[in-house]
Figure 1 (cartoon, rainbow, N blue to C red):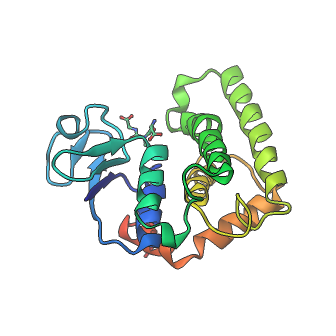
Figure 2: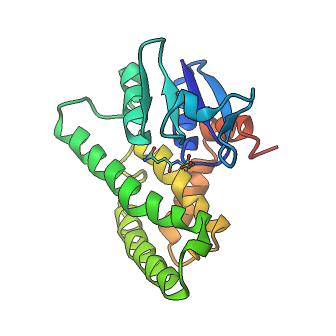
Length: 203
Ligand SMILES: N[C@@H](CCC(=O)N[C@@H](CS)C(=O)NCC(=O)O)C(=O)O
C-alpha cells in the first residue's frame, strides 16, 4: 500500500492514522506546484484528480478523498479503535464530524493557500465563517477530551491537520482555549510526531 502526500497538507491526517496503526505503508511525496512525485513521475498519471491524499491499495484498488481514505485505513484495524464500528450510530456521528471538517473547515481555511483569489471583502466573509465554525468545535471540546469523546479517532487526525493551518494563515485562534489545548495535546502524540517528522515538518 502507498500513500501519496505533500508535507503539511490535508494528507497529513492519513499519514497520522498510518502511524497510529503502526502499519508500514510506503509514503510518496508529491510536489503540488508541479504535480510531480519525488521520483519525477507526473502525479496526474497516477491520480487524475491531481490532489493528495491518494492511497494505492494494490494493483486493482485505490482511493482518493481523505474522508474515505481515513475510514478505509481505520477499518483495516478495528482493534485500534480509531473509528466506531460501521453501522453503529456512533459511526454516523463520526461521519458527521468528518463531513463538517471537510466541507466547513478544510475548504474554508484552505482558501488562504491562494489568498489573492479573494477580494478584501471576500477574505472578511471567509474569516467570519471560519470563526463561526471554530466556535462549534470549541463548544464540542468543552466536555470532550477528543472530538467524539474519550478516545482519539480519525476525526482528530483530520481536525488537528486542518487546525494546524490556522497559524500559517494568521487566523487568530487564541480566544479558543479548548482548541489551543487540544492542538497541543494532539501534537504531542507519538504518532503525530512520527508522521510530522517523516514529512520533514519537525526536526
Ligand atoms: N476533496 C479532497 C481535497 C484534497 C485537497 O484539497 N488536497 C490539496 C492539499 S490539502 C491538494 O492536493 N491540492 C493540490 C491540487 O488541488 O492540485 C479531499 O478531501 O481529500
